[in-house]
Length: 207
Image (cartoon, rainbow, N blue to C red; front, side):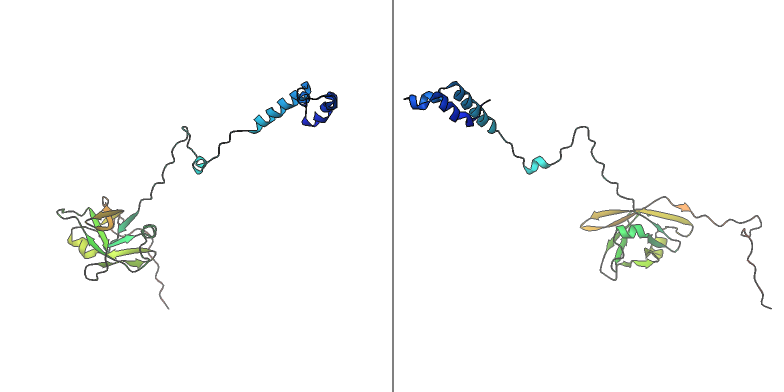
């Protein structure tokens, strides 16, 4: 390969002083090779460039990639105590933002059913038709002993648990407490004589 820097040497070889036609210098074989090499370099520099867009920067999912599974929402539960209090444990209360401020709820059941299968809670600011949400230890609860008793729910001899679901109907939004199957409460173990098992406590008598 030849470089354009060799052009002066070629001109000397041709001896332009004895040539009337200057184009004869450019017809020299060595100059022809340099000219061809120069055109080749120019052709190599002219490249077609494709520029990326913001959409090209999005990661495309391969066919072999499995779709990501959505995280399963935790099941929110609660219980009804032996005193007829609807209890929301700390985990459930935190997930529902219960107790962040004073709250009252209207409580209802589905009409036409003899047995309570769900309790419906709708938050309200009216004092006359609501029940207060109160804090008891780390949990929160609503005292509904009279309502539950009058509607045939036995909470003294049976354990009741529920699952909390959101519901919306007739422009109202709230929570549905879906009651699970009740379980009989386990009594303390007694002996054949009818006395509770275990050692009796010693009572010290002051002298």
